[in-house]
Length: 57
Length: 474
Image (spheres, helix red, strand yellow):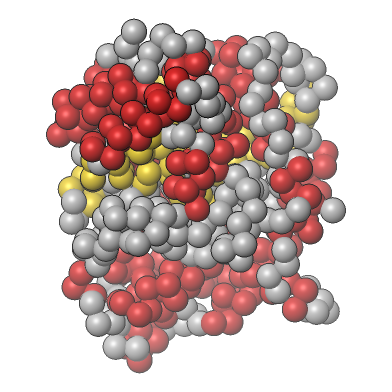
């Protein structure tokens, strides 16, 4: 897991305990969610800002 | 004729029939604001002179035979992050305490063109980044059903103002539930439209890919006519939906009576959305589902993708985008931020870019899954919040024997729909034994607002929860 205190210190930011707990929770979730990413896909298809109306087609 | 108990639609009819003038409605609202706002703190700025002038103009136009539609002469308010030319727009912050824009937001323009009368600007959570509306710079906003409780946020001033009858409609913005949570906690109706339906030009941003603007009003039909006035393509907003989308948004107002939901399929989540709820909320929302069934709708049990995962994706997106929005200010003017918002911005600054990119990939996948699910049903019916309005200053709530952070609890059933961009409407679903309002969401297909409003209107007609009002609303 990431060391949020160290990452924040690198940016001269002090994080409280509650903030660190939330970030740890998100970190765990995002790590778990990596299993849902299709690593064969073309990322630009997922990350481009497609016009939203195209999604109604 | 007085406007006590009147809905926007009632007032529009009375104006058209000449039973009341816009000047009279506006004076009554101003008088209620003067009497009740010291207890509620729902309005941050009251523009009484402008309102009177706009009301006079609306009355003159009517006398001359002009009819701008159902909002012509209707007193409304704007959340204080919609830019208003010549009128202070703070975004609930010390940072923009003296910010006076030189232009109107697109929504403000559109509502003015529809003939609405602006009473002023409503209070909100600082920078729209939170759900309590316990604002460190301008004071806490109070819930009209119980002044010791929060109205929800971030559009809490708008929802409290509508619930207390200080105005007939108010605008809101919703990045992680900020229209729907206050609508639920204040017993009114709020709609987060499909992403891109309402222009965000001139709306002070929080997270650009999650921000939505929409109306808060007492009833579904009030919301429908308000959305009709607010929606439309706007080339000044790069995220504004073009073309075909708006064809689907014609004739939004449901008929005067929607007696049947025959042929409508309503998705009932079998996971996540009905877990860890206050029993009163659980009962009320299920009661609404059974009313829909009585009206002919088919309830379809569905397993949805894990809501907690979708919330994580939404939260990473929000934290990072909000940090990017606040980057120019947070380092040099951090003392001007309240503690909770400063902490959230700092959290966003430390999240690695790779997490943001992966969140967007996961978000697209979730959008595909939800779109497929919404081909099987016409809408989803889920609670808006797992609990009713917490007390001002309360930080945790016990649900199902487990303590939960108020902010996380209040947003866990709403924030995912911001990441998906789907239309989601919160409407009253009943009351607790203690008399506090309970909210429920209907979530529709992209640009499916018309069908969503029709289903909601049928349920509203069948249950009559909107007739019950806070005592102070008189």
